[in-house]
Length: 447
Ligand SMILES: Cc1cc2nc3c(=O)[nH]c(=O)nc-3n(C[C@H](O)[C@H](O)[C@H](O)COP(=O)(O)OP(=O)(O)OC[C@H]3O[C@@H](n4cnc5c(N)ncnc54)[C@H](O)[C@@H]3O)c2cc1C
Image: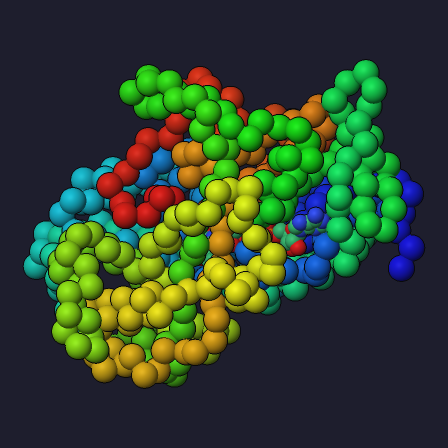
């Protein structure tokens, strides 16, 4: 297929962010009575949903300790709710079930959710939490739980199905998606840093604006734009850290228990919310009784017909390889290096059994296929949404991104000239200015 010589807006990456940005850009051009055809192209070196968006567990939640993240998520949930069927979205809600070390943090989240009108219920106390959970699952048995935050909105969506739904929306609006085309570099204006053309393995495309939604490959685009590999970070105590790597990789561990998804319906036969448990109760192997964890651990899970079982994950682990040497390709389950480990399977299934009697003895049902994948994280593990080189908008979501369907919409509006207040807390200069997001007591790098 011939590639265009020019497109006003070149979007790199046919993942959730690239397609979401193209969606709102096209809508806005149409609202202004302008042509879309030929003006917006999305380029992907592989295909639609070839990156993290094609393997994400798909959880959509508001539960974040950081106010700016919560406001952003509430905005994204509005977009998911705008077309649940077309986006393959299941608005089943979400539960954060926590031990005492997290209770106060989660209470703050609950209070601020009430302030922004995000519907949720907060249960406190050991007995009240157990009773609340047993009202849903009579075999609930998780230990050391002293609070339950039940978000009535949010839920999950079905990675590739949602992505194809999104594709159909944007193609109908006139967006052109070109797959099997790899961006290799950029051509720059001589008098400024602005990008004038995108260089690909199929030829050059001149452009007015570039949007990079490259997920785990963001490191490579950062290099192509000549941005700093190491940066200065002022931490929350005002301490300056020089030469901090801009990027690092974490392995996100997920898997599937191949039981009928109905196994996890509530006692009255309804779809349960997505369940997320963090506790400091010792975790024992469901296989041989050995101790797996004595410190805080966490898991999340849901019945999922798309994955064909009970699907979920646990805390990720840091990839030790120096950042420049991490092999992102082949990505996800095709990676020879970065897939969920047998230790993860052992821990996750044992944790399911810790929470529900029905999962005791379920280890043989753990699927055998490779799953999981790596993600590229910023120094504070929160997103960077910002303009670089005058006309390149980078969406680097630090792996919060599946749920952030609305970010592309905000980016489109910003690119069209309207600065977006919701994106402000995620500018690159926050590292230098010390305007970092608050840190919670969760065992995850992203909550
Ligand atoms: C195992 C796992 C589970 C996750 N679960 C969740 C979850 O439950 N909820 C949640 O909110 N988030 C989740 N995430 C995070 C979420 O998936 C990502 O944040 C999000 O999908 C990133 O979207 P993206 O559009 O930026 O990138 P991607 O979906 O990775 O898309 C990037 C695209 O860029 C293309 N590309 C790369 N380099 C080039 C190039 N040189 N030229 C052209 N194209 C290129 C790739 O082929 C790819 O298709 C999970 C991530 C992983 C790995």
